[in-house]
Amino acid sequence: MSSATQPYPNPALGVRIVFFTGGTALRDLSRELTRHTHNTVHLVTPFDSGGSSAALRHAFAMPAVGDMRNRLLALADSITTPPSVLAFCAARLPDNTGEDDPAPLLQHLRSMASAGNIVWSDMPPLFADALRLHLTYFLQRMPNNFDPFHACLGNLVLAGGYLHHRRMFGPVLAFFSRLLQTRGVVLPIVGENLHLAARLEDGSLVVGQHYFKTLSAPVRQLFLTVHEPDRQCSTDDTLPFIPCRPPLGEAVETYLHSAGAICFPMGSFYTSVLANLLPQGVGQAVAAAHCPKIFIPSSGKDAELHGLTVSGQAAMLLRYLRMDAPQASTEQLLQAILVDSRHGRYEGGLSIEERKAVTRMGLRLVDVDMVYEDDPQHHVPELTATALLNLTTSGAAL
Image 1 (cartoon, rainbow, N blue to C red):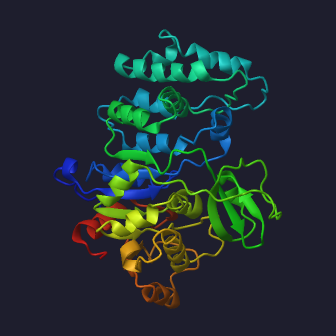
Image 2: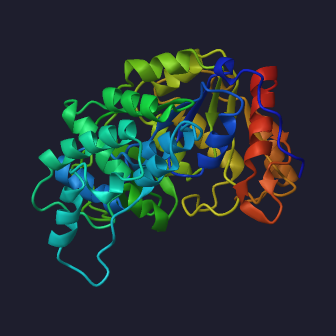
């Protein structure tokens, strides 16, 4: 593998790459890209329904904030943001191992509203005051039966700001972007409280993003629903699981229209990437953007794929983009697939027939070294950034 690339001379003037993303797969690449551009835009899925996110969503009927918090921290300026701030935002309360009574943990959480709490002792007042204020917003609204076990403190302060600003993400995300001096923009793809659902090839239904880790069959149809994920599967078609297609927000649409490149990056295929394409208007906005559109499939194991090859994944991307852009050409929606055939391990492989299938779709397969030789599950951030920027700035994807 070659050494890291030199950063762009002036990242403040760097290219605007818009990512449809979620989860942690893009975290290291996001951090690396800040050396080259401060203008990346991360459209994040707010549909997580498991773990501590479930407790927040159940208590407040709100979208999930965990992936947004994760991306804000990845983009934070590590020079101006103290390590204690980043550590606080990533820290979690203890889980409930051996302890079922939440009262002591809730008391501990409430004690953090005091300026004298030890958690603020090594944090500059500017940061401590801001975090404590947003934590207080949360505590003022926290129900008595809230489940605090394993709660992420960063999620709680974001939730506090969201609730304080009348259930709007814009003000709280803008505030924390300034506080952390993030080198990029983070937005949820939509602000509604919805859940990810899928009808599988065996006829069963899955409601709730956390169930996608153990799918019993390939996905036939992916959609959003207002229904709560209180069960995993059902074959009863009479249940009112009606797909919802909320419209894109004005800010999201603006960023897509002004993109220098649009990227469908590595990550859990359905829950981190395809879920972002479900709102109304995504396909039209992508088609209208005059820029390279690039897919970086995951290398290694993705439990969601169930044998869906790289060409199959590209076809699925096009299918959902065309839900509201049925007349758009393939070139308007997707142009290049970025892979590493030497070190990557892709679902179904990259055989000659698979490469021909990609070509028949009208797509370019761009093959470069960017996956760790001894760890095919992960991309080398420096090499992946170089490959993506080369396609973006040269227009080679077009």
